[in-house]
Image (cartoon, rainbow, N blue to C red; front, top):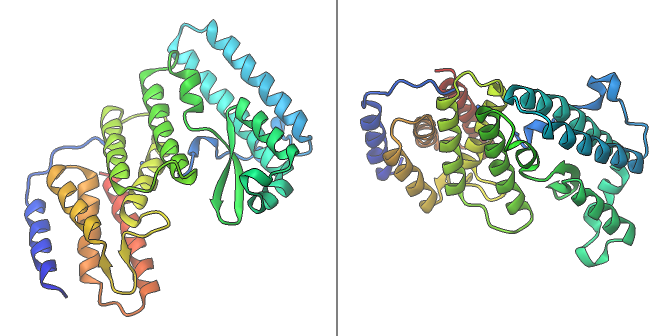
Amino acid sequence: MRVSKYYLIILFCAFSCQKKSPSTVEQDPQDTITEITYSSDPDYALQNESTESLLDHLESQQKELKTKLKSVNNRKDADLLFLQYQKKFAILVDSLNSTESEVLNMYGQWKENTKPDSIVVREKRFKQLGMFIRNIDSNYYDIKFLPGFYHKIFKNKASHDLREYLSLIGKNNQLNYDIQMNIKTFDVKDYRELAIEWENYMRKYPKSEYQDKVYAAYEEVMMKYLFGNKKKTFDEVSKRFNEQIEQEYIGMIKKYPKTKTAHITKEFMKFFYINDSQTRSSLFYKDLRNKAKEEITKALSQ
């Protein structure tokens, strides 16, 4: 174990001794608000429809929602419309992913300037309806709503709870979108700030109707903060943190000592240092992920 670790563990212990402030905080993975399958609702089982039929139906449903929202003055009614149409839209997008499965399987083989005209036209229609084709990994694509889709529709009508929830979901998805589209590079600081914002939301709305999805979003953000994106925050073989990442974690713990985010990060680092003699890097990585999820779950239950 390296000498610097002893200093860090002592530092962690010092923070542990601070009096903890009472917390009422409680956690899309990727765009959680659209993760509903059409098979769960027979009334909207549209998997046998054509792509054009589904897109026409989605367009009419969006127009219908906007018309209804114009006459809604009660925030509670607006929230109910969100729940109703979010489910309908999610089912339609799920159905699109089914009908477009062959195209999505081939999508990775085309570069921007080699896409068939039919695909370019399809993408344009998707964009008009607030959707895009997302790259999950090198070989897998799916259709998703653009970041901020729901917030843009409901921000002037919904309750404060829902508006702030949709705003944060939008930020979460925008960050993922920007990285995927190479608009910006991955930076753990972005995920640290987002984690703190989710904590503030949970503290402000401890009984939010969207609590489960908030927990899931917070866990997604924390796992990216601790493990990185495609490039990890540490080397699995040498069992060493990237030096800048290590300093970021220490600085965050000092700056936000009473937050769940700081506590989780501190426990993550302690586990890392104590177990870095583990010879098998794959087992070390697996144990570290399990520990991180365990600490996140524990923090959110307090």
